[in-house]
Amino acid sequence: MAIVKPVTDPISTNTHKEWNGVQPVCIWDFKDRTKDFDWADIFLSVELRQMDSDYSRFLEIAGRLDKDTSGLITGGFILKRLYHLFETIGFDGGLTPKNTWEDAKGNEITNIGSHLNERFQTGNPIMDPSYDYAVYIYKETPRKPGQKAYTKVHHKMYPNTTKGKADLTSHVDWMTKKGFIKEWHGEMPPVTTDTQTVLVGENL
Image 1 (cartoon, rainbow, N blue to C red):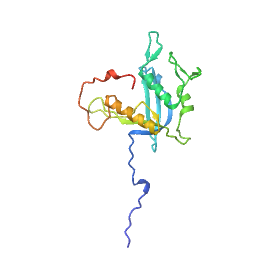
Image 2: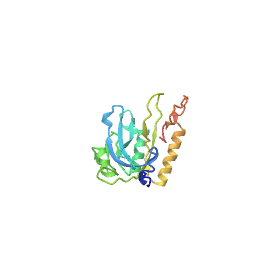
Image 3: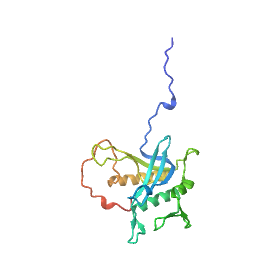
């Protein structure tokens, strides 16, 4: 009599997938959460979905902006992060010095989340997702021993092209070498005196 063995599903023979590192993503949702945080002049949350995943990851650009004595916005590294995102997705509007939103023609935008969703969303429950962008996903080293390591999306997004992924990899390598990206590998790094903070600026 023949031996009966379970049928092997060819799709399930290799179920391991690496979810961290440089990953293709679609943009699922933009949301302006600035009013939720009194410490932030801006808090733009970008919900992302990875290929073959039903779980969301969030790229967040949040913090204080540089202002003059009259309270008008003059710049800052958070603003640089914001406009890198806008350049990547093709949005040519932005913030005014009075911290209001306008399109490139000077028309006021009352809800930046809805405005971006209508024009730059590349995935949602009723459309086929398009994984047009690449981001770097990693587990961030806890600030103190014993704390949980959380998964984080680095704030710079690039086109999901050969050049875009190469540029992202180069940027992440630089940030890691300078100590701005502290990736968790299962153990706490040795305590050292941080002398890199002076580099906060152009490349962040």
